[in-house]
Length: 127
Image (tube, rainbow, N blue to C red; front, side, top):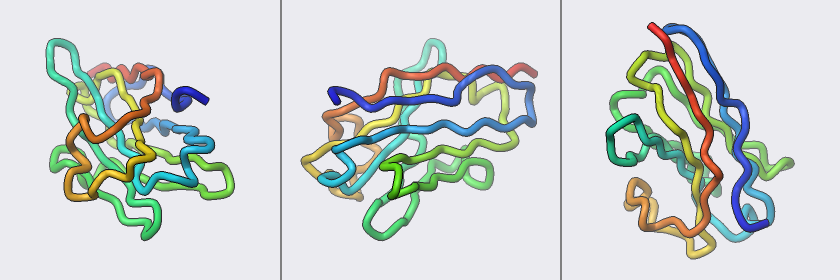
């Protein structure tokens, strides 16, 4: 598996919900973190959230706290980004990422820490 496999994107109205899935595959055994990034139209890619797999601790940026959550299913080697109360400004291409080099959790927000990425999935929120 050369890249992570994402699914679950789509179009919703503001206030709606979506759940993104990220199949990590064999990387799941060697990595310590799965992160989510997004790139909004005309903006640089930004970190959104991550999950520290061994301790099941999550980190989120302020603008999504209280609306987004990150979970995992060890039996499926999959991480999920649950997005509730979506806003128009959440419209973006979303990417999950990981690395067998085990990034420092304090640097989870740095995209340079990740070696393996998903293909990207579009989330569109209409107001």
